[in-house]
Length: 285
Ligand code: AMP
Image (cartoon, rainbow, N blue to C red; front, side):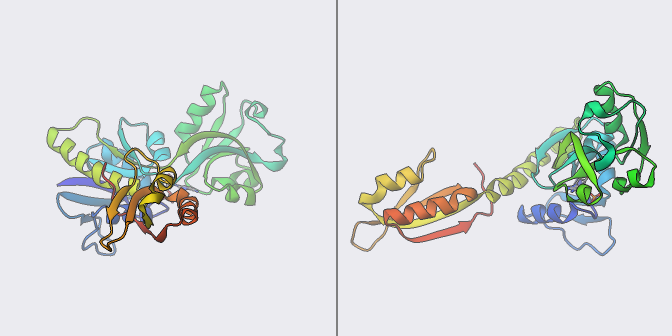
């Protein structure tokens, strides 16, 4: 059994579960509070706090895990980042009170107190910029610390920036960009490596498919050169005969989800009919 540490709650938990489900690694028979559950096949999930996952994996309690890149860096353990899962995007930022007069890093004086849930990253960041600061470690809600007078500035996570704004804070600089990562123990036996390869292939196929759509359209053969211009790509579209005795064909192609609107409009203007767009569950190159 390959043990995978997954977040038991919080922002990442739901999206992790959805990704594993889509990859065919469905959480089976997990009770309300159960700490472990089968994912089918040779995979087993251990549910723990997102913050603890880097330690669990580094210590070998789980062979792999999914957690935020911010937490992996804060833990500072030797870990192998296998895959960026592309959700849970956020930034760890330095922020100061709007009225503090701090606009940029150079406005921050030595000796300021910095409230943060990320003491190591904060310390390393300011050291790297040649500044001596005092870390005020907190376990949450760092953004209220400046208002309580326990810190001058904060180093906190943000995605849209609205929580910082709501708390009268202004972003000064980005410490690190983060998103959810699949991590693993760096030293592993061949059997674990094989299982991890299987896991990354399954998760990767889902991630690749999420940004793509499968497009089908009917047209006549004489339209194909123009269709080819709208649907380029290395292998071009697949052209399938339609058995109606005429010269109609069906064109199939995988296209970027972001270009679907443009592509379907262009196909329509060429004269294509019966345009069909569907989601793709998995894409294995
Ligand atoms: P949580 O379990 O809710 O404390 O969050 C765990 C992880 O979710 C964080 O360490 C980040 O990697 C990630 N995350 C994504 N977006 C945000 C956000 N806007 N604020 C805080 N954490 C976020």
